[in-house]
Figure (cartoon, rainbow, N blue to C red):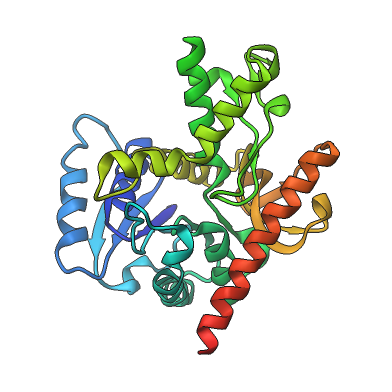
Length: 311
C-alpha cells in the first residue's frame, strides 16, 4: 500500500494533502507540530470523499512515527514570505526547521523520495540532502514546476488558450536569478518566440520571475499556495506512478551545463526513484551564462547559511 507524508499543515501543506487525496494515489499522513491542526484539516479533507471517491485514508498527526515507511515525503514546513521580505531572509528560520524535519522523517522512512517545498527551496534541497545523506536523485525540490506553471498561465492569458498547451522552460534559482528561456518554451508545439515579440517575451519572463512576489503583494499577509500545491502534487503523481515525467525541478547538477555540486532548477525526468535523468539542452552562450550565474547565486546562499550555522 503506497504512502505519502506531507510535513506542515499550513496553506501549502493542507492544500497539497487535499490535491493528493483527490488524486487517489496513496494513504496520506498530514503532520504538523501544532496540536489539532493536522487532525482537523485531515478530517475535513476526508469528509470530501463522497465527492472524490478514494480507496485510501488520510490521517493528521503530531507524531513523526505516523509517517513511517512513506514512499514520498514532502516538506512544506517553514516560515512564509511576507511583503518586502526576500527569500534570503527566510534562511536562518527555515534552515533549522528543514534540518530538524528531514532528520526526523528520514529516520522513519529511510527509503523515501524526499521533495522539498520550503523556501528558499534550492538551498533547502542542499541542506536536506546533507542532513539525510540520501542519494542525490532521491532529494529534489519544487521550483521550475511552479515557475513554469506561472509562465504557462501568463502565456495562456495573453493568447486565450489553455495553459496545458504550453510547455514552459524555466530553470535556475527559484527567485530573482530565475532563467526563463522563451525559445525553448513551446506553445502548441511551436516556440514561444513565434507568438510574441522580443519585448513581449521579456515582459512575460519578468512577470514569471516576480510571480510569487506579485501574489504576496495582493495577499498582504500570505503567499501562494494553490499553484505550489498543484505543481508538487503532479511531481508526486509521477513518482508514485513511475511515469518518467519530463518537468523542471530543483535537482543536483554534477557537470551538466558546466555546473557541479549544487542544486537548482533544471529540466529533469521524474520516476519512482526520484530524478531519473537530467536533460541537457543546447543553450546559447548567453543562456548558459545566465544559468551558471543563477546556480552560483544558490551556491552563495548555501555558503551564507553555512556561515550563519557556524556563528
